[in-house]
Length: 148
Image 1 (cartoon, rainbow, N blue to C red):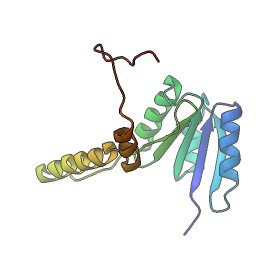
Image 2: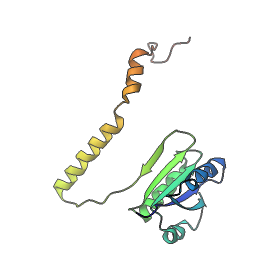
Image 3: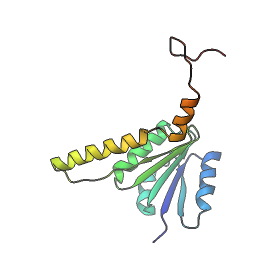
Image 4: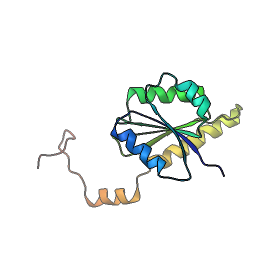
């Protein structure tokens, strides 16, 4: 199996440099880049690099620049997955598209698959739900937390 080619696109700040260091530490990953978040030649660079996946590292996971870039990459290369990460949340967001046959039965299969996937993603973590039960939160009549 060949190494995955990871194209790193990041703001040139400490966070982006940290993600680059992490990616370079793995021998079984080939890092391409990093490229700047506002690189005007990105379309050509993607064509030349032919990455397996793109990682966008920005301080703010919800930044408008990262969202617009994700949209453009997926429009240009629908089979390419984009992973976004940021300092504002301790999560990765993975964006990918899938091409499916266009029959009516296939549409319903896709709807059901998405529904099941969304339910699983929104199920509470068992540990978290047990903690919530053992430490109920008291709120005031307007729904806010009471002052200690």
